[in-house]
Amino acid sequence: MIDTVKTYEEFSETRFLSDVAALAKTLGAPYEERTTRRVLEVFGSHFHSGAVLWKTTDRPGDHLGYRFFARERTDTVRTAVEAGLLQAGPLTALVDAWDRTFGTDAIQSCDFDAFNGAAKTWVYLGGMRPAEQVLDHAAVPAALRAHLPALTRAGLDHVRFTAVDYRSATVNVYFRARGPLTPARCAQVLAAVGIPAPEEDAVARVRAVAPEDFCLAVTFSLTTGTASRACFYALGVPEARMPALPPRIGEFFSAAPCHDTEVIRGLGWSYGADGSAYLKAEHAYSGDMAARLRDWDCYLTGSTGRDPVLAAAEHAGGTVPATDGAVAVRTPAAAHPHRRGPAAEALCQVVDPSTRYEGKQRMGLVTGVSRQTVGSEALCMHLIAMPPRTRGAVHIHDGHESSLLVTGGRTRTYFGHDLEHHVDAEAGQLLYIPAGMPHVAANLQDEPAAGVLARTDPEEQESVRLLPALEQKAAALFDAHLAAADDARTATAPSGTTRTA
Image (cartoon, rainbow, N blue to C red; front, side, top):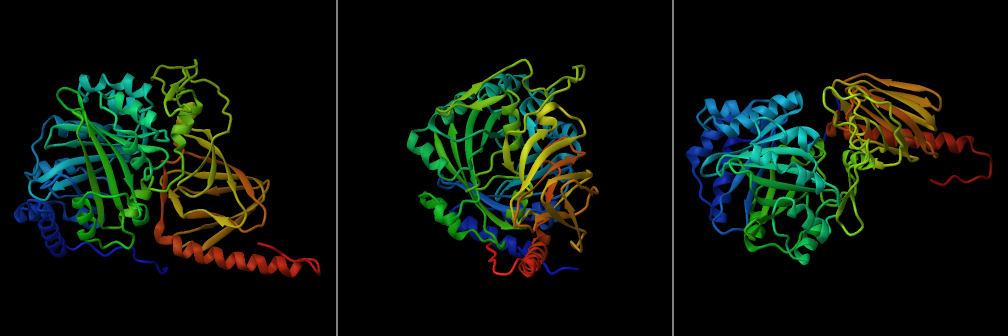
């Protein structure tokens, strides 16, 4: 066993009931204890195993909400319907359709209202999904599907989450879009769904805390397909970068209790088709919200990473941000080769490995062969670069084998359920990593290392699951082994030479 740093306190129903009542009172939000107790009776296990947050808006008297982000696959809709918290209907059918479409990759989570109970069902789609795979579905109303061409032209062509809101009978689609979020780029994506753009100073406030490749959530009416609102999100906003806040949001952030070590705060700027605007706010409560967001590769404030799927689509001939912040769309004959129908012909293709990015496992990667670039069904292969004296993040690939051909330098891989083993590989050697094996790569040398990485998962990043509980052990091993390597190099250095780090 290893010593781990506890990053959160266990969820407690008694404490939560006290906390939600106090926070609702502070905000002047309606609260119903009986409803909240019923929610905990039905979904108690998810509050214990998942990550929980608070949510509200700057609108006076608006309701207080709370949400669990689940860590395991489950049918929350069926559970809620059987418990009498929801009635089956078109919205629950839509969740069920997405759940069946994305299978084991789909994770359902739930929003609740502190007064009314069940409010929304979320579906994490297992990573980045082409918008047509999500929206061009028989269960999606035709009026909503009709938005696809305009969304694609604006570069809103990849979706990570969907949700249905039972209170307003609406569908929420969460796009990750190529940035940066300039005023022109903002106007373009909002125009695609008929939402007026905010003033440039408002866009500047959002851009100051939003990641480079940004999240835009669009709310569509289930019946008419009309887009009523669009919201830009910034997650993990540190206090030092927090913009000026409306009084109610400031009070919410000050009063919201949190039992995580790392406090996650989020903001969402919501703009309506009627020209209205308001600010949303979210605050972590328990279950290590920070780890859950990172597991799902959610970009936090300060992240400079660019999404590899968007980069691959761009390279293949998809949407390309123009210098003025707009998106130019190029459509060569081979554009989007991964979007082929069942009868389409598979082609031999050459991929130019020119797009660099940092993967979830904190490795320098270069886009290569994947589902996103060539339409591969069971293979991903890309280049990897490791700077001197660095290591990645501990992770695992559920259900997928990996292999690394080292083309330069020397790598060390720590592996095992306690990272109790390690193996070295140098240029010309191949390393095999079984499916489901915790591991982390390191470079203890003073020179960079490089290689070709292959995996039996066609997605570039989707099978990467981080293991934060092993990070302390990995850091200790790396530091000790790096110090030993430095001592060995010093001992063998020619007399009179001085080694620099």
